View: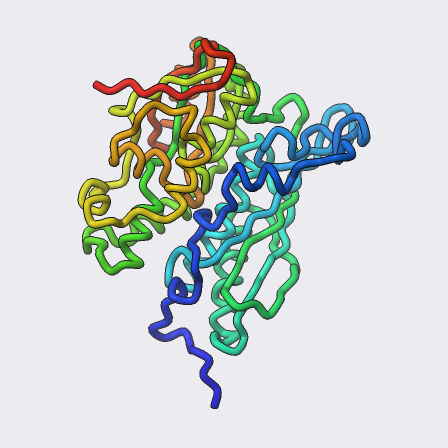
Length: 356
């Protein structure tokens, strides 16, 4: 008997053990996986390589000539929402964001699809791929081809190729002491999607996380052209604190966060009280525990919450802050100044919280 589910009434999240960028491998485990004994892919070995994996940036970069570079990234995960089309849109938006976070423009994408053929009909996978295809088309480039396998859980994502002017190439390591920290999307995506999976999401909050995850970070290509945008990254599976720590370590700095200024999706206190905290939150905290102050339960749940297709986090020099905020207003993108970067006092990057 064919037990494959059709698209009507399907709940994709019931077919996966993880969700969205919460599927990421923990940072400390990833370091062990990527450890090199032979020098690996470095600038010394490959002179045209501008950005490799050593800096934990959002994409790799290779010089085309003295003025331009090619960007390459890939991102894929298991369903974070139940609707197949929305899953495709979110996965595509999330993957493409890595190109924008490097200051680039996407030019081409290919799809990565894993599908439990004996459980879910091909027509459902078609809706997933169509969601990704439509996002690429809306942003002005094609999704053309890819690779698929029969897998025990649904997986979808993209490998994206982009280009960037080398003068505008942004990394997560260029911050300076005194820079302000700006974030373009509210936190709480992991909490909201967990509440939805557990059947606890309030009716008034349905669709908020999906809408946010489908919001493109295309503004990154414009921000990169502004003098004073020193470092740029997107906030995804490692949570705000995890990605901020990568920025701090890259520049040998520490950070002060104003917890009252951090934007959030509505209803987080209620969902946290009901236990709607994804498993990736603890993983993110464990990777940073010795570099953080003591956190309340709420701070732990929000600041370490794995984001999927989250906002852009940037370090901006004081004299450029006004221009950055004007651009974000012009692009109709809400943003918040979260805090600032300071010199290291202990020799190791730390994150401090300012509570008002």
